[in-house]
Image 1 (spheres, rainbow, N blue to C red):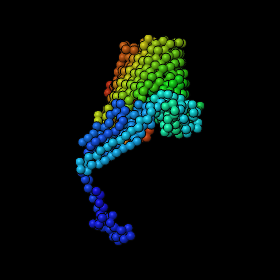
Image 2 (tube, one colour):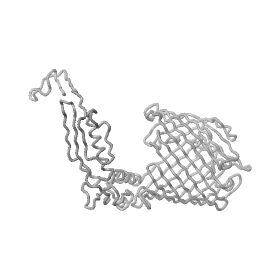
Image 3 (cartoon, one colour):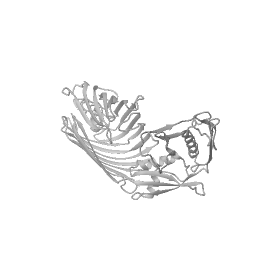
Image 4 (cartoon, helix red, strand yellow):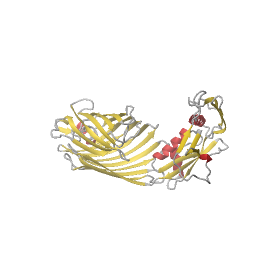
Length: 513
């Protein structure tokens, strides 16, 4: 019972034609009354295997939210088994005030088991209908389930060509027990530009920018053109640049496979060498689930390198195969989950390159230790190896170094390599470990304590090797495009080639890993 009293009088008894001239006090008095519990309850018929909420049982508090949750569970169970048009056709809810119980009876009409019928695109102006259907990937005749509909919406969103995607099931089935689905989309602006910047106290300033077309040929194909320059005002090495083009066609061969075609031109001016590399690649990327992606393809690369007074040409034709397992809650600022990536690329060498096998591995783990993201423990392990090729006959871009923001903070970029027969170069073996503790001190601010260590060896798994380590503190400020990162690190263990580096400064967007 609810009573509203105006200066002691029941508000409902005050005539609207005779309002009081003055009001000093309004009191709202709520009498909850006795608590009711569920008495006789039934939702029928139920699909085999239906699990209703445990609170929907005789003797439990008769909350309306529990009734709604039980009905939703019953309807979803039928939909999961293909009864897309199941509905509630009758309900009887009776409160017994003598026993203070609520009796609930709900009748369901499952309707026929339905398969997917026609897919009808709507709202697409620049994207062809058949490409919308192909990307959605709903096959005519497959069982209609909420999971299949949600997966189709995800595939359409992942193209980036659509800002809004909603799949609506028709209210009336077809005579052949299929039901049509309308793919209602709103297309995103086709073009996008972006930029990035990084500052490293040893490696200087790096700038990058890209231009993206999200629907190049009317089939949700993406073309990304990117340019980057690094080493501006670097203390070691010179200015390098990267030019790249990447074409991606979704739903190639099947709904879960994308085709990627790429071109790259890179100029590298590093501590030990200068090199120009040109690369062409073609690959297929297959999504097996929300967390597992597999890719494979072909890679043709040619590199001209100048190091230790030598000029060499390296050519390779490789077959890279990669697997990614990603359960992170947010890729740019993860607080929970795992990220595992591994790649094996056997390659045939020509010109002055030996044939060999390049292996790379990257594993990351995140845990907020039950603090809802306020304290996050993060760790990373990296491994790399080049097998079967001698160091002098391996492209400079395939060899491994350690040092810098991507490996060991506190040591100069690519400062740790190996020396083979008096020639300084990267190694054919590499390992690095990183650990961070991230503390959120305010809504948008976090501080980070970190430590990194890395090792490089002349052989893939053996040979002359060295290692170094660094540690430091960082500050993070959350922005809509990812956390702004500032890290200051100092050497903990130096390698012999570094004697004058007291600290390193890193500024960028996104966590270090």
